[in-house]
Length: 240
Image 1 (cartoon, rainbow, N blue to C red):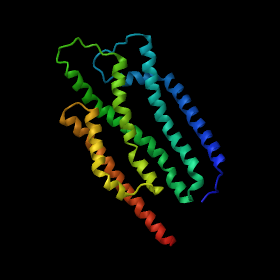
Image 2 (image 1 turned 120 degrees about the horizontal axis):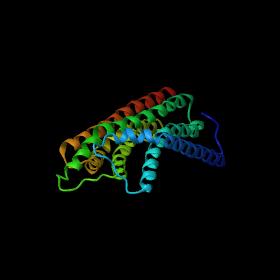
Image 3 (image 1 turned 135 degrees about the vertical axis):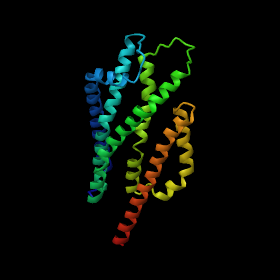
Image 4 (image 1 turned 180 degrees about the horizontal axis):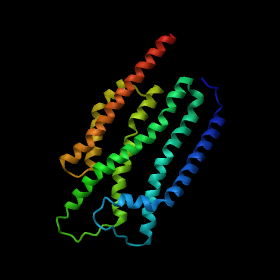
């Protein structure tokens, strides 16, 4: 175990790390803003209709939203590293090495979640919603509405795909165990179903495409927690 830190020293350390995270986010935001034109063209390619804007404020709003998502993705491993550095004094050498592996995992799982939502879910939902017009409206899609709709789908999925790593970390700390997760399976399934129905169009295919990976993530989390819990029990038995 590392040395015990006084409470005020903990607060000072926490403040320093929060400042580092905030500064990293701001720098990432500015960097993404410099290349936001490329991000815009890549993401706008999913729309077959020409996107409109209602004024100059829309341009700034869209570019800031896209830059912010890029900045979040870049900052996630920095947040994880700073969190790791903050809890390091309370960890054993083995726990430090294991916790260090969470950092790239958080980054890649976030990107996988974004990719799944962008390439699979978003096109289905977008076309479904447009299909509801059924030729009854003169369709004018603003770029602001288009990207807001996209990000409302993609960003939550990027965060939900972090679930296995979060469970792994909490299981290592002993806060979660597979028995608790198994007992929460029914309410968890219900909550995931509500999320699925809320963010998808009212058709079975879209619901299934969302709920299946969410349930798979939850079951994967239980499996991970079970493995970690078993290792903790074995280590405790060896020490005893």
